[in-house]
Each structure stands twice: as C-alpha cells, then as structure tokens.
Length: 90
Image (cartoon, rainbow, N blue to C red):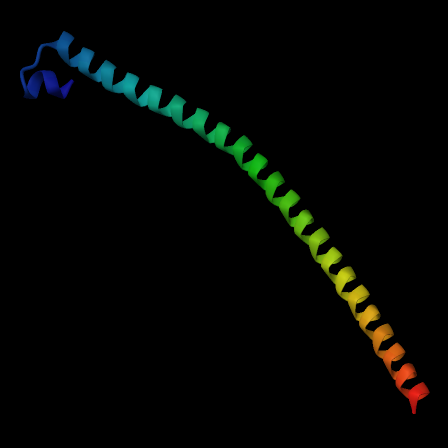
C-alpha cells in the first residue's frame, strides 16, 4: 500500500482508514439503492393520482359541456316562446 510507504503510516492504521472509507461507500450504495426503489414505487403512486385527476377533469369538462348544452336549449325555448307571444299580440 502506497500510504504505508509514502506517508510512513502504520499498516494497521492504513487498513482501518481504508476499511472505514469502504464501509461508508458501501452504506452509501445501499442507501442509494433503497431510495431508488422507494422512489420508483412513489412515482407509481403519483402517476396513478395524476391519472385519477385527469379522468376527474375530463368528467368535469363533460358535465360542463352538458350543462352548457342544456342552458342553450332553455335559452332557445325561451326565445321561441317570446317570439310566439309577440306574434300573437300583433
């Protein structure tokens, strides 16, 4: 090991430091893997929620279109009724 010869560090101390560094990297790898898997399931939940909101928005748009159509029909009926009454009074 270069650190033992170059820096004159005792062999046991060098192995301990490299072991600790290796352990930190290993734990970091495990944590990253855990978070990646957790994020994948979390993203699936968000995707499903987004799909539900999209469907809800489409339903609301359809309801709005239906209400608009009914309001237009009522307005047409009232206009026709007013025209008939106006013709009758002439």
